[in-house]
Image 1 (cartoon, rainbow, N blue to C red):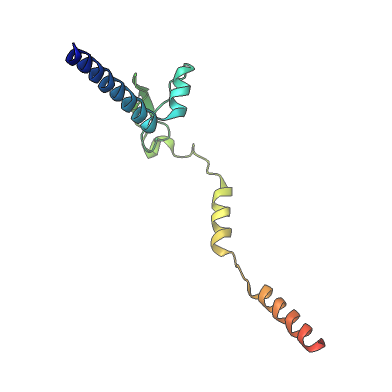
Image 2: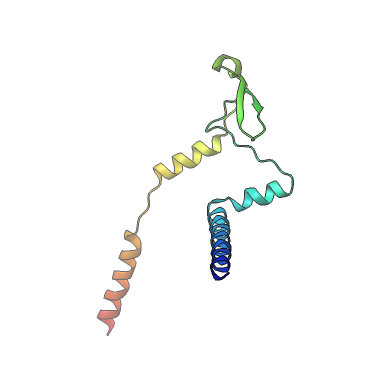
Length: 118
């Protein structure tokens, strides 16, 4: 009788430990946002690394995209307008001058003026 109770107790402990471990690792490695969106009925897409402009894609049941008809450069030539702001920001960043020298000069000038007047 004692052995039977011990076996039942150990089986319950092992099952509870396994369930706890499963839930722990499931929570650790799952994407919470994706789970919440799926619970609300939103099926998120998983696009490939780069979508080709003008191409047609089919979405499978898992949300992954498969290319159906790929557009080549001749098809999209003259239809794409690039935003000049991105290039302007890059050019400003590359051509910008960042100087700390004037701040250091002002600080030195102030400290020399204070030292002379004292």
